[in-house]
Length: 423
Image 1 (tube, rainbow, N blue to C red):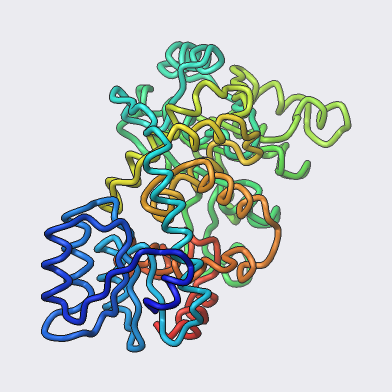
Image 2: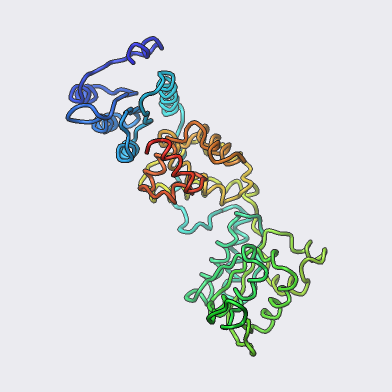
């Protein structure tokens, strides 16, 4: 290895024991350190810790022919730059060193983005003029009993607004129950909202309380209201007018006291004009209308959101990932078709996976390319999948379900990859 690296033009020093390695590392700062894991009375993990203590920016590359989940986790938690399984081609080692060099040069060239100390406590973040108008409307409407319709693209934070309306209302101590109308089959929506009595249909073996009754005294949030079919729209209209429910199989109605907040990502006014949505229901829901702008129309809020999510995920995973100015600039230039939900997912991924714990322009561009890709999960992770998988597993303390979600793959796919990697 010394011969190959010297032929590539690198200045290399080699030692034959962990004791000598640790002595050298304490005497001099090395930008790149390469070590086996299983050595003598100490291991490469000890070398890693010493190198990082003396020089936090040091890139440590570990290699072993006897990898295990424990050694991978220890290497990741210790801040190893890369973990290579033997046997490997020297070209792979040289490529890893070049990536380490690029990261080290970025440390010198890039400035860390200025932190924002006075971040809000909630995810309802933004100081743009559009968001200030929404806050003002919420403050006036929340204490009332008015029905509110929230319109906006998917991922803009409609449920957060609904929760804020509830939290600042007289019903704040009672239940807040969200219902995704688009995820419930039309044939089941009535029983889901109004409830069912035993024997109402085949298989109804017990009484089942509906959402409106369960939320009595509180707030029901009907998300994706534009997906409700015309047949059920009339029944919902009657409920909004009378505030009465009649469970399936019941002979009489009962009064309930709930506030209804609805949301949609569709143009309901257009649906009314096309005869796909009842006009009288539209008027009943549209007492107060809130239109949430897409993230691309509130670019000045992106730094606030980015810093908020970075702080949250650093705390959650016990990390110290840094945001670099160049990375923030790329985020501000991106269109964010998935809005805040997409930004949040990407920030969680970057906090864990950003090379060297630095979210710079390259890291952001790579993350955007992966998120924009419609390829299969195996192609999405590409050549860096082993590094990403071990970092995410380390950050989630081995929680495979959480790791699979962050990586954007199914849990069974993660298991197959771990088996193939010998982890």
